[in-house]
Length: 284
Ligand SMILES: NC(=O)c1ccc[n+]([C@@H]2O[C@H](COP(=O)([O-])OP(=O)(O)OC[C@H]3O[C@@H](n4cnc5c(N)ncnc54)[C@H](OP(=O)(O)O)[C@@H]3O)[C@@H](O)[C@H]2O)c1
Image 1: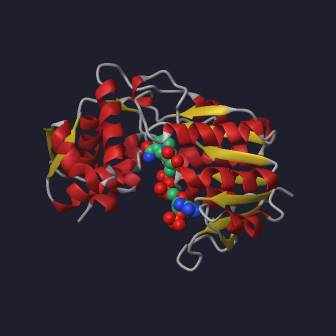
Image 2: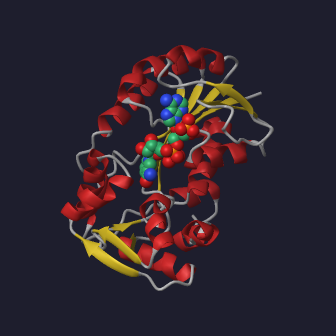
Image 3: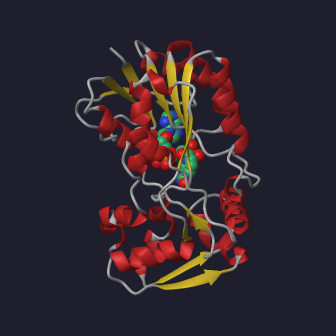
């Protein structure tokens, strides 16, 4: 039987992966830094582990065939953690990014890019089976980007409102992840996953306003204002990376792929569907 370890199971995508895996006949284990506070489906075996403390990974990996890897830990932890993971697992499904897609949104200088490339290189060289998931912008970014402003008032201040993206629902990323975890026919595949529509950031905030029945005033702010005001959503290098990507993306539609539908046979969920299903997050 395929025994799967999910790393990142408390996060946006990992949580959805776990909830789908327990509906299969796979044995499922989740690594958690704080097992006491992590809330997982009861069928999941929970083990303590931390990617930055490589020794903790060995017991987590015992008996594991396949790993789902979400990496948000620091670059210094990559080599020792990947060594442990790749020594044990036969197959790895890595939540990566569209770093090879020639669209300006994905090709701006990015401090995390070198780390993602290092992880992929280590996985490829290991001789293990692998699948790389390359989702574009997550619809769920709206929770940290716009929900706090919408919960506290009717004004949304945001830079580069004309920048289009094709936001993808985390449930759709998870649906592809679960196929790749459970079926070795996805070995060697790199899946660039997007939502179904190119929508400017202005259109995305407007969709949220309509879906929750609010009249929002959407105000364009300058990149300099954004550098001061958006430090709540990430570090300055992360904000700068987003600003550069949005600026470069203006003027052409977002990159939209049919990969999700080709793999699952179903259309990807729209941003409106995602907003409706998460509407409570935008209400005070
Ligand atoms: N947001 C986007 O638009 C976007 C687009 C493309 C690709 N991505 C990629 O998607 C990934 C993020 O996915 P996500 O949003 O699902 O993640 P997330 O919600 O930020 O969750 C991160 C997960 O990693 C775990 N984690 C963090 N540090 C850890 C450590 N030292 N040891 C063990 N576990 C650790 C967290 O566990 P705790 O509960 O312990 O914190 C949590 O489960 C990133 O690699 C990002 O580059 C994001």
